[in-house]
Image 1 (tube, protein in one colour):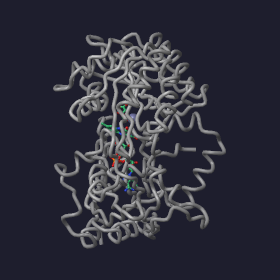
Image 2: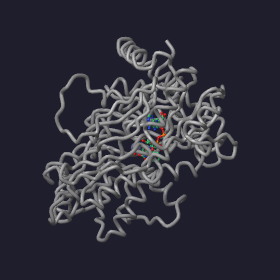
Image 3: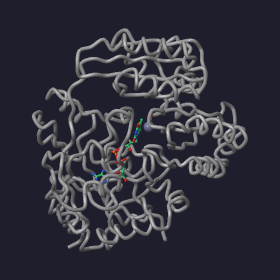
Length: 469
Ligand code: FAD
Ligand code: 2HG
Ligand code: ZN
C-alpha cells in the first residue's frame, strides 16, 4: 500500500494533511528564508503514533522533518525542495501529563507551547523559568531540540539545564523513556543530553520531565542608562554581587534598538531615562517576600557613583514592568518591520563583550555602508544578537550583498575571542557552512559517528545540523 494511505490508516485521515492550504504555511520558516515541499504534514497525537509513523518511514526510507511551533531561526523545521519528506508536526501532542509540586517537576508533551507549560507550573504554585519572545507559539519539543535560551538563562540556565528526562522515538520507531523526576542518575551515557540540541536529527522528542522552581513572590525591574557598552561588565558584577545572585535577567538594548521599537511598535512607551548609547534591562526576582526595589535602587546608586551607569528608571507597577519587557521583546519585530536585516547570534565570555562590541562595530561600519548596528540581547550570558539593519532609503539588494563578507568577519572575530557563532538558535540549514568552517575535524567526526549510530539510514531531518563531509 502507498505510504500516505498507510499513514492515514495508522493515525487517521484527518491527521495527514496534503492540501496546499493546510501545508503551505508549514513549509516555510518564519523569517521566510527557506521554502520546501513535502509529501504530507503528519500530525500524530500519541507517542505510539509517532513510533508507528517512524517505523513506516524507516521501512520505506522516507525522511521525516520534525516540526514544533515553527519559530526557529535557522530553517531547521523546513523540509528541502525535493518533496520526498514528510513533516511531522507535534502540535496535537499538547497534554501536560503531570504537575508534581513535591518533586518540583512537570511532565509535558512535546507539542505543548512554552506559555502553556509556564501557566501549568504557575497553577501548581511553581515556576518554569524558560522565557522567550516566541513563548506563545514555540513548543517544548522545539525548545528541547534547539536547546533554547532566552532571557532567564543567567539565573536558571538553558533548556538543557531545565530538563530532568525525555521521552523520544528513534529513527527505527523504538521508544526511549526517562520521565522520572530524578535529580541524580548516572546510569551510563546521558541520552537526554545527546537529544537536547540535536534539532530533530537524532530522534523525535515526544515528552519531557522539566525542572520547576519556587514561584516568584518579589520582583524589581529597572531600565538603566549606561555611559558605554563597556559599563555592562562592571554593572553585571555589581548587580549579581549586590543582590546575592537574585539577578534573573540582564538584557542589553542599544539606543538604535530603542529608536526602532518606538518607531515601529504601537503602544510601547519610552521609559524616559537620560538619552544614552546603551541601556540595560535588569530584573531581580525572589521566591521570598522582600524589598527587591530597595536592593536594586541601592545597587544602581552605587553603580552611578562609580560611573558604571548614568541614570535609571525603576518599574513602579506591573504595567510599567510589562512596558519595559515589551520594549526589549519587540526588538526582533521592530527590526523586521524596518526593512532587511542581517543577523548574528553570537556569544563570547562576558568579560570580552567590550572587545566584541568595539571591534564588531568597526567591522559593520567598514563593510556595510548601507546598514547600522542593532546589537542587543542577553548580555548577562555574553550572548548578543549582533544584528544589522538596512538604513531607510538604501537599496536592499546592495545591503544584503554584504552578508557573506560581514558574516565571515564577525564570526572570525567571535572565534578569535573564544566565542560561539551560534549561541542559542542552533545550526539548522542556515549555519551548516559555519559549522564546517569553525568546528574541529574531531568534533565533526564524533557528531557524524553519533548520527550514523542512531539514524543509519539518515531519515531524520536530513540536510540539517551536520554539514556534508
Ligand atoms: P521549530 O522551529 O518548529 O523547530 C526547531 C528545530 O527543532 C527544528 O530543527 C525541528 O526539526 C526541531 N524540532 C521541533 N520539535 C521537535 C521535536 N518534538 N522533536 C525533535 N525535533 C524537533 N530562541 C532562543 O533560544 N532564545 C530566544 O530568546 C528566542 N527568542 C525568540 C523570539 C522570537 C520573536 C522568535 C520568533 C523566536 C525566538 N527564538 C528564541 C527562536 C525559537 O523560538 C526557538 O528556537 C524555539 O526553541 C523553537 O521552538 P519551535 O517549537 O518553534 O521549533
Ligand atoms: C531574542 O532574543 C531572539 O529576541 C531573537 O533570540 C533574536 O531576532 C533575533 O536576532
Ligand atoms: Zn535571544
